[in-house]
Length: 626
View: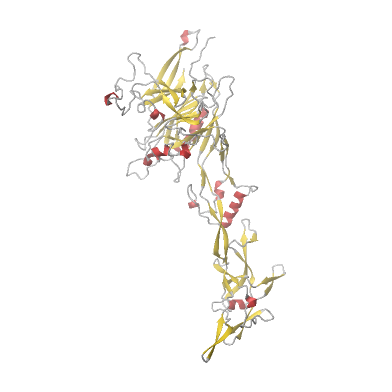
């Protein structure tokens, strides 16, 4: 049998549509699920695999803080907060006169004194040690100097208040209580002796102590002091604040394993699609595309809402915001869980890593390229100018194991001027060098209008020189994947460098060609007759060659041709006779023919903008070989 196969690889073709919020997932499913035919009408194994898929997660982490000079507050059973006081430390050493005689008697009491000279009243307070029985019947001794106390209103008492010893504590999330000197929580211990209610009331316990007598003329006077029994208790408080909300955006990662010649080891490459998320919840005009090597991803585990539910005000938890903590105890528990490697986590965030460059730090993943299919409205009277998540996106995909050529188109119904038809290419190109396989993988996508109000981006946002952190980590000519093609490695092993399209073309449509007369700056095309040749009766297209500015022509895109957008209608099918017989022994079987689907690309920024004909050239992608 002398059956032959065409030079171009067989490809599967898939068309469909998706809601904008699901486009990255449906596009990935379409690529992975595409049936790739072979010469004998069977299907070859589709080597594209979906290796990671995650939706958006929002979670909160916490930071421990301190602040000094915080007033201690005791929360009583009536729900009210009362100031905590600290008793003076020198209660036992208050002197009555300049001779140093102490006011405290041998039983540990200080008497109230008034008048001149120090006349005692019948009021006294204990200033040594207070004894009481705890709930187990054990005698407990409390030192009164420096003790923490709180005054609680009580109409049943003689003074209208009662005074209690308190201690500074903390109730943990698991309801256990521990002593703490940096937490604003206090627990009643026992009531103080009754005279202290009188001593600490608003009239004050009178200790007008005469320290020294002096004369003025014929009269005698005394220096008097009124020692302070208690002051407001302040301390350095430990508390917790939420850090800016963490969030992940929906992602899907595809693994590609392009075919290689016999004797060469196959390699895996990865394409990552990301649904962008802004602070309002999402942007449904585009999605981001990146390619890299050595992808490892772990999905999240647990419930992300457990990191903030009941801890923060839910209305303050959103991407870009800093949540407001409403439960300090719960915030502390979550902080400890985040920072304890042995703790069982209620939630574990997803992780994504890539192989590292030679420096051991830089990850081998290309800058994000924005694949646009829609834009915001410019109609002034419309209240909602952004695209909704349920608007449809159409897609057409040509798939083989080497690459996926994709055209996406936003729904024109919301705004006939606010949609794009954009081309994207993911994968390997057909190399001119038989050994060009290791670094031969890349992408390019179509970008939207470079106007802030339409897409959120300007020209300056995608310039390498103005955004070195995004686009220059692999050198001066790192590709942004939108105005050029980003390929993994050059022959000199430079990563993610820009490659530009070249193709067979007539005089380009340049607006200004310097010394050449303006009327010769472009080939005037017959609006009604061009593009079909009167000499051949055929439309003529060109392979899309890719050229590096230093290394020259490298190869051409697989299953993609450049063709002028002239007298062709979007979705027209173009048939190419390859002149390769299907069976050398059976001429009646005919030749292999390639069917290309034509697309009138309408993306303001794409890799054709850096080509010999930036305005009118568009593409057709391989639909089938038959």
